[in-house]
Image 1 (cartoon, protein in one colour):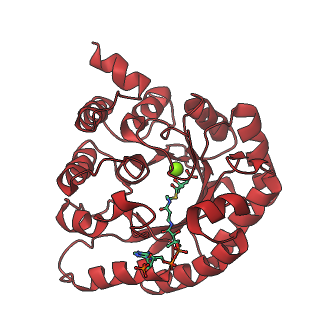
Image 2: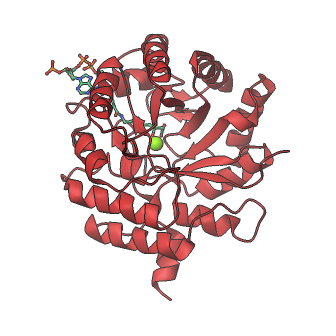
Length: 309
Ligand code: HMG
Ligand code: MG
């Protein structure tokens, strides 16, 4: 029987914070994750083991994992770009007493649909990155970690323009073939609309990839995030990435804003058969708090509306 209820992957603590230029104290990151856990979200991407030269903001991820609250049955995935990052994570996990809830049970690997973006984000071509990620995925799986894949720039690339959906399908298939349990399709720039996102999904699905292994990761630059999710629902997708307060952006996608806000997704699906778990008011309070803590305006329309009540 098809799963109707939507699964939310909260990416605020990673995608949301990675782009902030001012150093965010680990205690704030930890408090953000703890509050999101408290508000009922069960998958919270908590950081990255990437090169600190490339993304300095994520340098403290080990400390964050060590100090945040972890609940059994919840998932706290982290991004890993290469074997070096995986080794650092595995060392950290091996220091833990067996009686504790592991720091994490899942990693996310990431590549792109264009060489230009892969080069800007990971300093290699798509083909090279798939080779790199295959080694990471095999090793992580052997160590008992689940692996999720990301494909960036599924609609438009900031460096090479309009993206061919066939390329998205091919890269998605390669990630699934190496052992990713799910692939999240990233509209990194946030220029997609229901027509272009629908066309891209149609190509991926017609290529033989089932909707049950796909997720939508839509940045909200043009305000189309929720619309793109509703379109994706019609195509059978049930997993979506979102960010509390609409935080974020990718450091290698100039001008792109944050992910679609978690509050906006919950509100859009409220009362429907798709409604995901999570307490909207509690999550909106987290959005208000983190926006203030980062000294930014709340990017969630729903969050702002609830603040005004
Ligand atoms: P490189 O410079 O080619 O790699 O970067 P390198 O092997 O030459 O390493 C350079 C330095 O970094 C060396 O240090 C390495 O040791 C170190 P040095 O010898 O100069 O002192 N290093 C590391 N340190 C810690 N952890 C590591 C690691 N790897 C190397 N894992 C690399 C290649 C892939 C490492 C780099 O390009 C990188 O880290 N990129 C990550 C960029 C990133 O995090 N982007 C944001 C996340 S993706 C995203 O936001 C999109 C997404 O949201 C979906 C969407 O919206 O589309 C997921
Ligand atoms: Mg992103």
